[in-house]
Length: 228
Image (cartoon, rainbow, N blue to C red; front, side):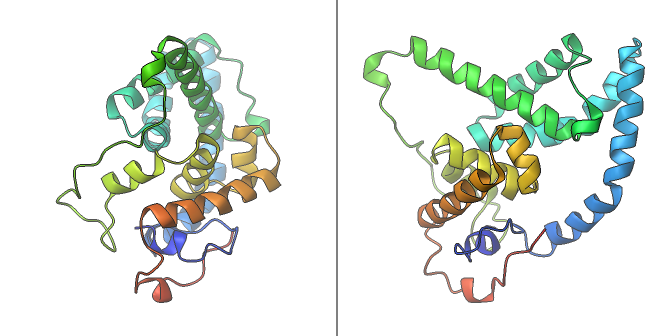
């Protein structure tokens, strides 16, 4: 799965994780971006006027992406579902917080989810016993039966990503999993574009080591990472 992404760690450009599939999806997303933003703007305006159906449509449209972002950040489906619910509850209580002229609603919601994750992590650390506070990599129980590509399945990938330091984890999930541009990721993370590039490059190196792909015969055929 990550052969194309980790195969060229010298490059700081985002790359497709699933060869071909996300490359095609990138083109489709680019062509539909204006349409999605126009629809989000319309639905958000209706929601602000009290239209509950508009909120339902926004939830159906953006729930999968927000859930995927949180899942790869936590590797915990139950916690991810809670964070997604909290994200949309936050939107309900702050309907005018999003400015459609400053970016996409999907990126904005990812930013809200990120802030909620950070608040939850701070609360957990505050009440966590000192004896349990030391860092431990999550245990894995082997490879799931369903392998997706190149011998690396989604469950194994999530287990590897969640062991990365938070800053690197955010960069690799946003640019690698969610296919965000550097500018979009920088807006969500509230940092410079150069910082995103640096974190992504370091994250790719660490993830390649964790997934033990450096000696994989597939690397030679992985090709160059896709450019924006």
